[in-house]
Length: 521
Image (cartoon, rainbow, N blue to C red; front, top):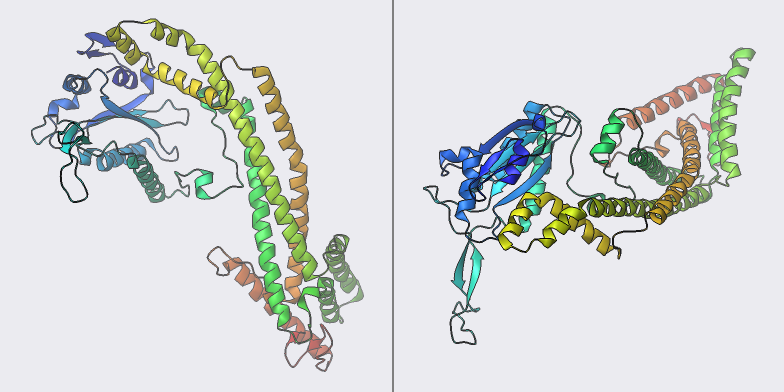
């Protein structure tokens, strides 16, 4: 009843405790509430005060669990009406249709964090709306289906749940179904965002770092344009992740380029060892083609165009020479080294970011223990069992936060109070080390950008050598159009040159113009 009062933002009367439960929360955040009933539930249970008093009355044990609670984040990309329809449909299919009563509270304070709180009943009901037992006993049977006697000579019996709502498997099922429901709603509304319930680790994404939770205070400050430490850390994580994604995409594209150029060069009989073929010669051959095509241009235009091409191609050749990337083989080795280096960077960043998240969690846990210590001490000093239970119910959230914080400190071998100064100093050092990695990542990005320029010029000579590949293995529309355009330009270029000068087919000379084959050898 205390939980329902808190979510509702209004006082409710508990017949179990014979007292009013007060919410101690802002009722303005409550946008919508509803009690969803299965067909066999009494209609008066649509009143939550009646419902939860009936639930309390049905329990005989002082330690009985009376409800299951959920807090579910709603996609902020959807409107209030769309989110309400989404969550009502989800609750109906996952809970109400199975016989549970669902008490729904839609909260939205206008801060970009719409969410719902759900309270579900634990007992099933018969067709007349009467509560059924949570468990029943049954004889223990052997592999032949025969009853087994215990050491006292009596038949062994075991307790069994009458419903499977408490099975651990539903934690995964309900999360997955919420993921599917959200994505369907986002798609229906024309949004491109998608939800994945799995962590980066479960998705197999080991190179990207998850962002840290801002919390209500930091989120409010960030919305007002006031930078916070957590907000700055999230922006840094976004920056590093964006760089890593860009580098991965570029490395993959260059690797595909390397494979395709080798396959294309193998098709030319004049190439005896494609791995040692000089890429600089490919670029210079383009200059020769353009020079022959411009033979009858006026001198000024010919010089201007040639200088422009020459500067770009010489820059590319110089770039390859400086890094000894003048052959297919050396380029392949460079890509392998770069990929390995990026893996090491990802591991280093990932480890430091994880430690920063651990430090933040420990600092928050220590603060929680400090703030809630009076509540826990008061709870510990109560000796009367009934009074202790009433206090635990009234302060359930605070006691749960306190114990959770204590468990986290214990997990890291710490106890309150922790050395906050040392942890903050370690966090600052780790943040500085991550910042120091940025220039190195940017430098690798600059090198890969230069290699993409080389790719552009090589495709002018061998259009089919460097096709990009989409994720489905097919050529993208952009790559197909670029290849076709390069091929068309090259054929038109060869035709124009052939009209100006007659050149015999030289099968043994690299990159001579062969009119018979209408290609570049």
